[in-house]
Length: 383
Image 1: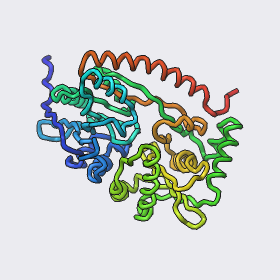
Image 2: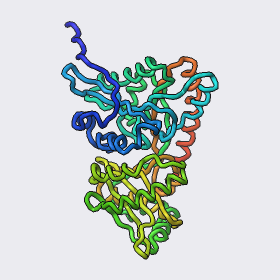
Image 3: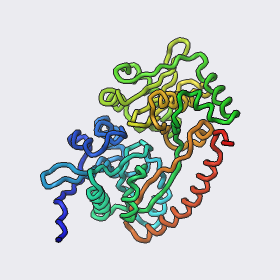
């Protein structure tokens, strides 16, 4: 039998997710990861968190069928810097500049400012997903870009990138795995004695003199967003000098995604908000995203971002908590090491070889680190 002709497809580079029909975009993924939703990606654009002046120019890759229906898409951006990615390639940029090349702009397939693993190729079938990768490569070649990068890719999508010949990079995050715990005390019972005592002490110290409120949906009011904005600005100023999100982004989150948000706010004895943490709900995961504190309160960061997150996950029957990038201190608090993945298309053959060599050395060092971390989990040893 003759092989059937492939279905007709049109590949396009869009000007933003907000311009795409929301139902069409969200029909390409299962809704389990809130950060690839049309609501989240479009609010980043509408709030000015990405766009003109930010170094993130929205350029979603899209595949349409013969009837003009969207059958595949990828959140993509033309980047003029490497900020807000959490997969660091500044050394690559410097090396390419020393060789006389322009590293920027580059194409970034990612969720801006969000180091959360998830699908990056939104498609109904693998054939259309592969077209997205071909589209990314074509954008690089046709526009003389140095490279394309897909960061925090869901593990089940990595074979598509490997098959396409993209360079693979692995990093480490720390996630809490809910092993069917009935309560936080049940989780504590799984830890060794020293860590169990440490966590109890930290929780008691953190909550002294404070009232902690858990808010979601319609219970989140404008004054709560005002407080969270102050917390976020404080953390941003101390960590990277300029917060990525605008104030409008928080209002839009509240308007479009409040049912996907759990906001924790700590009040002092005078009922003044002094700290907060913003978490997003996925289908089976709680995602810790933003935190801030206006006073120096020992262990409060751990309480709002890690321990309360475990409480919420257990109460809601969620499988895990992902509490953001980096943070080896999470290990002692029951968050185990988990591999995260990125993929990189380098157009110049010589530059590609140099990056591949670097990644090979990095991979060996990272494997040794992962082995060490796995051997230092705080759980009781089984007899």
